[in-house]
Amino acid sequence: MIDFDSKARQWDQNPVFIERGEKIAAAIRAAVPLSRDMRALDYGSGTGLLSFPLRDALGHITLKDSSAGMLEVAREKIAAQGVTNMTVRQADLTAEPMPEERYDLICSAMTLHHIPDTRHILAVFHGLLSPGGWVCIADLDREDGSFHGSEVDVHHGFDRQALAGLVTAAGFGETRFETVFEIVKETEQGSRAYPVFLMVARRG
Ligand SMILES: C[S@@+](CC[C@H](N)C(=O)[O-])C[C@H]1O[C@@H](n2cnc3c(N)ncnc32)[C@H](O)[C@@H]1O
Image 1 (cartoon, rainbow, N blue to C red):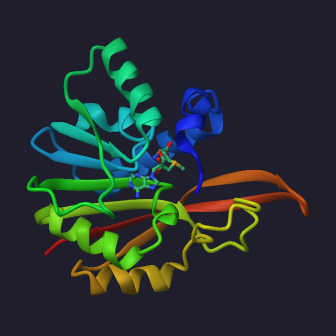
Image 2 (image 1 turned 90 degrees about the horizontal axis):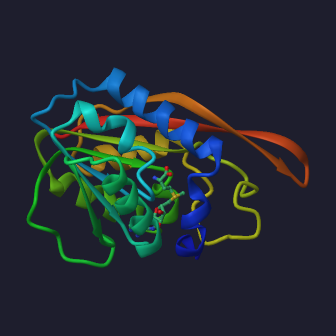
């Protein structure tokens, strides 16, 4: 288990994380007709690096994360910038009953690989969306485990076709994938690029 609380204060000091959030947000803006009527959930929001670049295109964004430390940083940024349409809530939807609220968009960046039961969280996302709502998930393509090194309790990215099958089985319509970013890391085998996809699907 990665201790995100201990990483929270340094998170926004990584320019790669900032650029990744901006690139994913730009791809969501291009793929989904966003509007100020829409209520969105950013699941596994961390410090808000995806939500902040989306905030002016949406009515409201709820940032949910299981890490109190990440959310504390998000809360401070919201207050410092005087943002009025973003709310922070600590939550772990893998271990809680289905909340009452419904959204028009659920977005999630680099969080799916930290959730053991992909099938279950996709069903939760489906249940949390209003009819016609969108799910936008950005994560790593299938990799050999070198991305997280010895931290083995995560998915090693996702095979696009296999993930599309799970998304369809959860009740969503057609899935679209595109490569939106590449994370370059130094590994024991030298410099490596890890592509990041954005998957977009819609609830019927
Ligand atoms: C790699 S970080 C990505 C943060 C942010 N989305 C970004 O792109 O900068 C993964 C985030 O998922 C959160 N997370 C992991 N498991 C979770 C769970 N079961 N429920 C909610 N959040 C979770 C972690 O606390 C962390 O903030």
